[in-house]
Image (cartoon, rainbow, N blue to C red; front, side, top):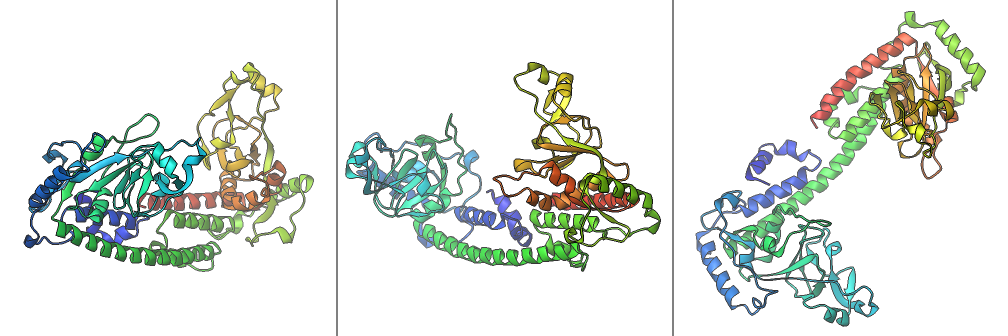
Length: 523
């Protein structure tokens, strides 16, 4: 995180805390301030980093650990101005990571084929032991003394810092006891003039990007080359204490925010439910307080749809009550579907509306099929063949991913859907997904298609499907995945207003959806 980002956070702190990841980003901002010398004041009596760096280099040259090719750290060039992302106090110094390390070494994995190497008493660390942990005091896997001897230099000393350089790139931990490590980790022994806790917090600010064929990673030389800000040792310790105190405050703030968010979420759901039932206007009066997340927005969108299909979004107009429409739909329903009984009705509707079954508002309907893949002639045409995964909960304007031929159309019992038809996904993960078709085309067996009666607006049917989708999917529950049969779709209840009112409802919902889309863009 750059210092300019930190300044932006501080300048807009109240708004920033309301972001879904606001606390996480604030923690990163604290670390940036800490490693740039802006979290605690400098003290001249604590000396300078130049003086400290000389001691570190003397220690490195004396260190018995800094021998042998495997442990030897690399001679490094000074940090250039271009590599310095921010300024630091005069008493600090930019150094390379490798210049403050006494040794760096890797690990390995004893053969999994030899049972005598495993299930011993020696902890063996891998990336799975480092998730969310600062101090590594035990591991999921353990090896035996025999397993330890099978690989050289597996065992690392307590107090070492281990970092992931392949799998889990960027993770870091501090060993609390002697243990072995695998090949994805490097163990660093720091100079005694580096506070291990300060090293730990600064390492978390590194922008580590790896490369690789199968697994992204960094080399040992790349690891040692990272620029590192070096304060005097006493200041390192003061920085660590300050960061710990601030992080504790952020933990408390996060806990309070989670509690507040949970309360606000319950209030939002309650307000949206009451708004959807037209019982009060709390949701509209306190919209900015209630709508903070995309989940809140989804609750509001569903509340609007519930108002729309229950006759509470727009006023009724007696002049629009066309008795002929209702009689035609009633006649069709009585011929092909069971009558609606009071026990089935989920909510009240205006007197000018009519509860009907979904099948009664379509002049034609049916599902599709999949032509044999073994017949090359079936998939060599230009007829759109839609699958359930292509339905988009909107107007389906794209051509199908696959096309079939006129021969397939004739021989495979495919229903031709025309522009303006409603498509509904019937099976699996996409069950209940719905689209209004803009181009003609056929479908596979997982899609039901219907041509609406002239007395209904397909856009109103679409809105109702979105609102009632949970109840329709519930009818197909019970198996591993939902299975909404054509019979369940046909018998699904729908509240029908007069055609003119359907159109007014659609226009009002579209108007509100534009406002909600603008609100979503601002989140």
